[in-house]
Length: 69
Image (tube, rainbow, N blue to C red):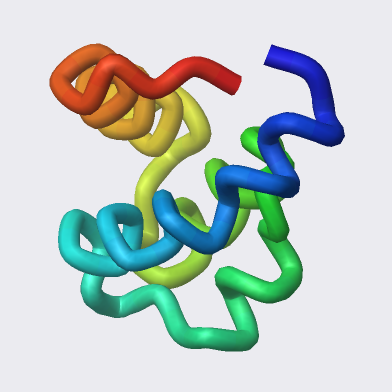
C-alpha cells in the first residue's frame, strides 16, 4: 500500500488502532498519521515495550484486521 493510500485510509483505521491500544492519545495518532514506524514508536512509549514487542503486536493486529501499510 502506498503512502497516499495509507493517509487516505488512516481516519477509518485510527479508531481501530485506538481500540487496540487505548493508551494512545489523539496527539499520538496525529504524529503517526499512517506511518507504521511512528506508530510502533508511540506504542513503545505508551506501553513501555521494547521495539520487538511493539512490532509483534502491530503485526498481529495487522494480520487480524487484514490491514497492510
